[in-house]
Image (cartoon, rainbow, N blue to C red):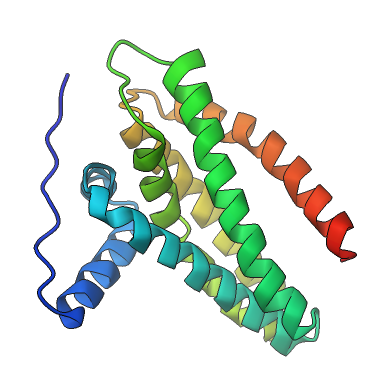
Length: 192
């Protein structure tokens, strides 16, 4: 079953680009299937997906910094680099596992489609800016985590053309294994 997504409108100025980015972030956070289909099929949305990953990481870094849980370098520089690597690897693993190992007859995707979908799925992580709120900062982090997980499942399901949400969830769980290993290695390498 071939799907045709609508192309992203031409961006004649920065205001339109910002409006498109914001609308897509809201759509992704709202778990709207149409938004995930849109970014999946818009090859011009890869850089905006990267921007979402960076913004979310920076928000979490600022939250951790304000909470006193990290230095500026740990929170912002290492955090952003780690988030970019994690996002790229998770999209790669999801593409390999979902696109080849657990593929269905309808599955057709490339790394870029998964990168765009999973990048926008990170939007709820903006809540991590509130990590510094005494007593409930951790609650915001937990909400963000599960919300991002839900977004990742929707992104993988749509990008890989799965009919099954459980199959998409399984791809995310398998993808978590190398991502956790990479994060442990990064944390050990930088001494956090």
